[in-house]
Image (cartoon, rainbow, N blue to C red; front, side):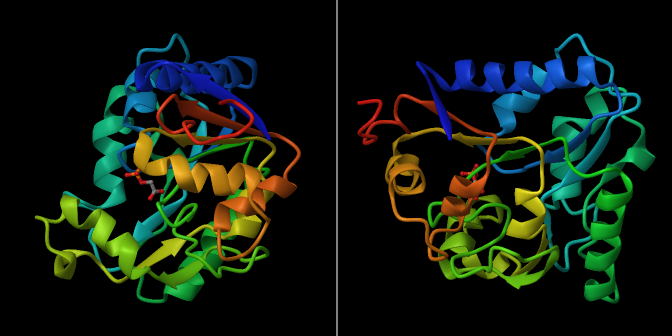
Length: 242
Ligand code: PGA
């Protein structure tokens, strides 16, 4: 895995947007795997200012909560609408997020996998990382060959996300639909973003620890084209860049 360390969160966000915008300029119908969360907010702020057209781009989000309608302010659809869709010339029919309200979630997950395959696979997937090492909502113990599926959320993930639901963990959905680690590992390029001191230890384990299913992000060690973009705080305890 290549590691790039930036002085500030703004710099790492701009670099991520530059990589993605450059891909879109070279391949106007690129297929992007996209994250939500607080980490990628700066990336989207920079991406919407990039000199690139998204008219033919296809996007697939990593995950969505089960049971939240699209219109719910904390749905990942709402997040994507306010951070990306409403600012660029993406065609709505080309923007995909698993449907957390699907009557048959298993069928929805199979449909999502089929859509990714029909699009030719993901050219790049941008990832955040959870404090427990999750990528998408693949919590510790997730098999590395897993495909898009319905998963329970780890208790510490629900606690971490309570801030978006009025501070109460009870308001956080207990399940999600997520691309699997197997789905993510098939992307041709992976960008893993982390910012802030709270992520420093999990970034150290991801980059320098044993590859183990108890830390899902260590699956990325197997992939030939991963760039890890960090600010100084997130890189603080790395041996190689100290
Ligand atoms: P965060 O979440 O960007 O809000 O820290 C990352 C994640 O849980 O994947």
